[in-house]
Length: 605
Image (tube, rainbow, N blue to C red; front, side, top):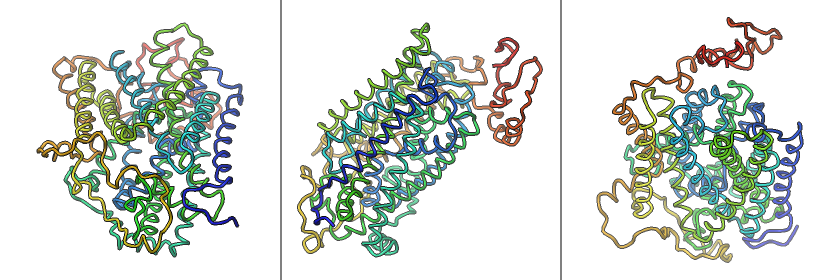
């Protein structure tokens, strides 16, 4: 056995494990660059040829949801604020149901590549362009933060550059197939990393029961807080209602997620991918909450953050890993691989989505003569460009630490209005392009107002309700040196905050709104303003194609599963009334939604 290590040091085996994770990810990209003839068309590169099945797509959806922010941030959240975070299990259920039953049917039956294509089909080019630009800005800023947030004790820039290069490499070579199958591998790494921490913490602390007892005595098992006050940071209602709006803006309309499930070979497979993903999300949430409770059990009488052993809450998990796994060479490296796998999967998803949106929304409409082969090369070039851009933005974000928290809020500020825009098109038949554009701008302005206000004038501690952290046992238990150089006091505030100012009712109410409601405010404002303006500008007089709306037939088609299976198993073609041949891979209802005018050579499209 090697000599005991001080907290904060890694052995060669830790770097080997981390490097192996990056190498395997790169090899998957190389394989899919050449498997099956390579990426011959933009459809192959961006959509996997629309031949994916439910299981790998489900794992990819889960991995795309994860990031270093989740791997490091969720346990720290539970450590500071308690296990009420586990109520997100209910939120995930509503998110998946809404995504599968409201948004997926419309996107899938249209056969689009970019979700923002829908905005032009339903409204006009201007609305599509606004949605595309907001998505690109939001995604580049957000995922630069994902790169620079995974501070784990490794050399930051070595890890960021290595992660960025490998991520860009396999995205560019293998396209969506490489991203999805790499995500499957990375989900395994994340689960293994979490499991190593939970098992070792249980052994050291005397079992799961001891960890739960410590959490109970420390007030961490605070599952049921039904306070309806929207100003409280986390309650049952803010998590279920606000969380549903926030995460539906990701799973329901965000290109990174939608691109995955509409790449499935049938709508049934696409829906199954979302529901299988729900089970995986519950598993990851359980692991991260248990890690947070393990953190508290280990440091209940000596908080490393208050004792200035770490400079930020997100460094607590790496600190725990290097504390309890230091005698097992390679396991700390496994957890680092776990954190960076989350970053790889999230950023790779976004690079692929950014390439898809740029090609489909900005290039193809203006250069219609480009061949599929040319578009495939352009898509690969866009992947390289956005990969480099994310690494560059990570450099900027790491030099401006206070920007990270602001950028995380920007994600909710932009996602809410975008979801409101899509909901307006799918659920409101009388909405028109004027109402959509004005509603989007109004929703974005209002959510930006409350989000920036919350950054400048953060809510008081009684609104956020952090739980007590103790240091009375530090001198007798932990005598190690600081793991990170501390440049901030615990509970430090953002550099953007305005200090020494008398608080007004606006600050104590509007700006103190729970951060989970930022997206809710943006969505509802977009919907209400959009509906009002549409009614005032003649929205009821327009004739909207039913393909662009969620219809009763879309829901009833859920009960055609057994009928559809029988069609797939049959080797006989099924003639329809105009002499064409029915494709059993598609649903009758989707075909019949299109009017008689949409025919080529007697076959419905």
